[in-house]
Amino acid sequence: MNLKINNLIGSSIFFFFMVLWALGGTSCSKKGGNVADEPVPAGRVEIYFSNPNFSLSENGTNIKMRALAIDATEPQEKQIDNLYLFLFPHAGSHYKYYITSSSFTGGSWIAAEGRIVLELSSDIVSNCDVYLVANCSDLKNSLDAVDSKEKLKTVLRTYSDLWKIGTPLLMEGEATHDFTQNRKLKSVELKRALAKLMIEVKLNKEHQSKQIKDYGYKYLNFGKKTYLLERKEPQKAGDVQSHNNWQAIEKITKDSEGNITSFRIATYINEYDNTGNANAPRAEVSFRLPFNGSGPLPPPEFGEDKYEIKLPQKVVRNTLYDYTLDISQ
Image 1 (cartoon, one colour):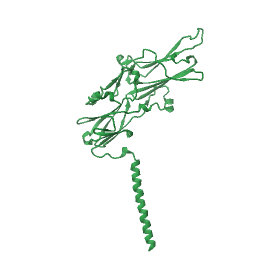
Image 2 (tube, one colour):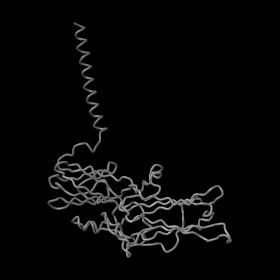
Image 3 (cartoon, rainbow, N blue to C red):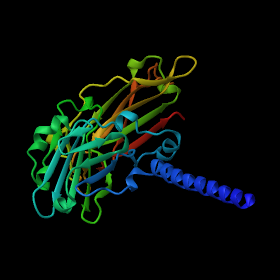
Image 4 (spheres, helix red, strand yellow):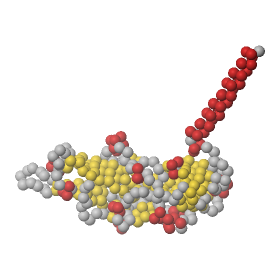
């Protein structure tokens, strides 16, 4: 009799702990699960977005090595300070939200998860086009006036001093989604409205100097307008800017004797597509280098050399153009 009671008690205790384990396991799994996979309650829709690194252009001469060596997208180039969200249902009125904090009228922004929650019925927005803009405080007045997708195409920044473009960078992403089928949109990928240009110049003995003032560069035919939405148009002569004077080099590498052996420059550039338009201004970079040649004339034999790098006929936004001008041999 005692044996049966003991067995019964033991079985009960075992069953009790198995239930606790199952409940605990379920709870842990839920806590550790992916928030993006959790269901969205009725009366609410959610939008997830991401801002990946710059894409790599095959036009650069050093792309493979650079891609393996460093991540050319800096943390500040992924920074997001504010958002402007547009919903354009295929039928009915549009909705828009300017978002500057975790809580805003009509919803919330969970920055750590790249998630926007809207207190909005999926039946109202239904099947719609979603446009998300990041880092646009200076464009707010223009965006406030937008009531259609066509008007979004007219929103732009015009730079009076193109060379002072800083972070955070203007970004834009878009998607079409039917919220009646799924209250959650997971696939809005933000793209920077600018491309990034990086150039490294490696020098031989004849072009080395201890004086940084002996070097200079110019950006030529860089577009002054940054459009919010992607455009595939040629550059126009009145819309480009060029350096008139040589600009000072800043990032240099020296050898043990103090000679400058290489230097780097980096900047942002607006997109354009000059394909099939030979007369459209093409962006390029010009370099001034000292020349300490040896020959029948006294040094410096030629004084200085000039080199140019022409950018592609087509420059794509959110793309890294990485070049190495190697004259070290």
